[in-house]
Length: 315
Ligand code: BYC
Image 1 (cartoon, rainbow, N blue to C red):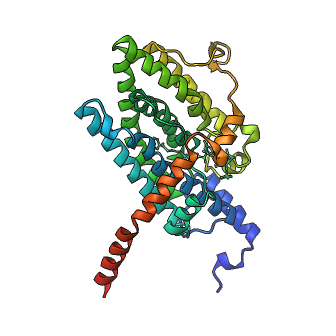
Image 2 (image 1 turned 60 degrees about the horizontal axis):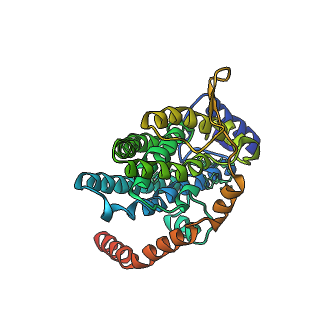
Image 3 (image 1 turned 120 degrees about the horizontal axis):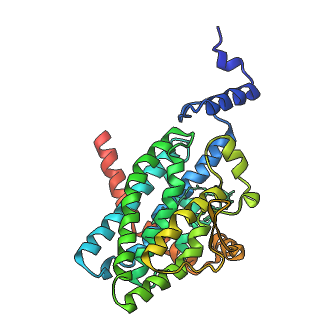
């Protein structure tokens, strides 16, 4: 007898697939899935991996200039963790049938995006505090949601990544706290970093829901469990009291607790700036891509040596 699966047409398979999702069952790489589900994951997971790898650059810029040995060790560990996150994520994307080389090529040719946040420069040590506090803080909110995403390998990678991200966020907040309790100049550095990183951090969550082409379908497939705007609001609600505790001011005159909504109201994001950065014309887009392409080129001999070693072992 033919297996039941073979006699179901695509529409039936799609219904069955949606039933699995609705029952909160994980989808695994060998399960049947609609092409669009597969491609959405390849897009999102590979872009997430690229973000981790490109995200090493702004912080890597400060490893050699960390103010103390303790700070240097923590930053080094954080940046190494990000390399690890990139690797888990590339591996998760590979289970969907795309090769590592293809993904890297998509990054280098500008076909694949990476998070807009990494196209801003790190001008002072306080930026390392602000990145840990705000950028990792925003990333955690998004990634805690993704631990419950419907695709098994992505969800499992996220569990491990979130544990490390919470250390990253705390090291950033601790840097900010030390600066804010230091001299006036140190506190000014912390304020300046908050001024520059606040709005780009809010942009990490993506366009408003009514301008997000992928959200509706991704919610239906439980790739996303919360929308861009819901996560952005959650981040603002978490972060505003943390800024108060530091004694520095979020650069948004419209930021105000709204007792009836039980949320903070906030001002308008500069969406022109967001799209300019996303389309490749932000302050550091060119430098970031050039750095990645250079690293890929200079690493050719390492890849060749590793492959030669692997094929030698097989024979
Ligand atoms: N930047 O319909 P939408 C980290 C694109 S790294 C650039 O809402 P979606 C860390 C979007 O790709 C953690 N592009 O899309 C590392 C889409 O374009 P395409 C990074 C953005 O996918 C080192 C278009 O805009 N986290 O933690 O449903 C140091 C329409 O958007 C951005 C992740 O990658 C953006 N900010 O939702 C420190 C999380 N926003 O692809 C820290 C995983 C949107 O159609 N990704 N776009 O050409 C996601 O959760 C979702 O992909 C997003 C966007 C929420 C980002």
